[in-house]
Length: 235
Image (cartoon, rainbow, N blue to C red; front, top):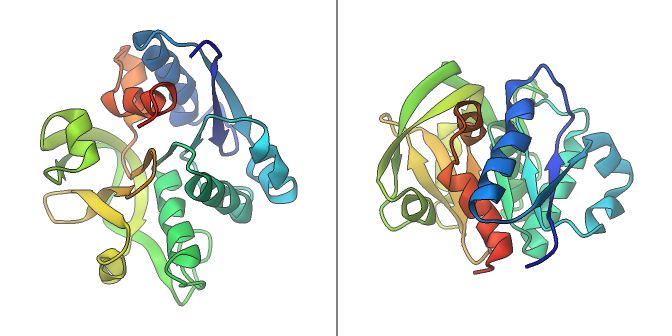
């Protein structure tokens, strides 16, 4: 592959958000590791709501970034659906993973009222709800499902990752995904969902943790490297 890998970052850039600073750095580190060039473009959620055709501008992969609520929930969900349906490599971290679950619940499982309790506190269907214990500037252990793609990427079945998060999948709705093509592949020691992946897709993963923070230590993260490799070396 001779051209730059074009990555669209779904979210509303804020230089005060650590993840927003870390993500371009993490992508650059991973790109250097696999001897590729990467071009990063921010895709504001309001733009995606009003001009969804922007997504057809040749992005090789899409990453839905932390720091929700987004300026436009509909814009973020439109972009996630586009990546899922078009087979474009997708990564959602923290708030991005939460919205990937909402998109799947609404458009695949038919649960059109599924919503986020942070942006819609009065929702009757809080698919994403406050964590029992907030993980703000915290690290924790994640147990990976043996044989899953994420476990293969890490090469181990237990990892420790960093968080800045107060919301996650409402455990009372976990069963909704059990017979679907979206599989829970990472949980904490209490069984709370921390990672998932989608069957029959080149690369579609969500993590409640923020792998991008590895960039602050100058470390190439295996998950971000695999994300880019799904573009450079399609599977």
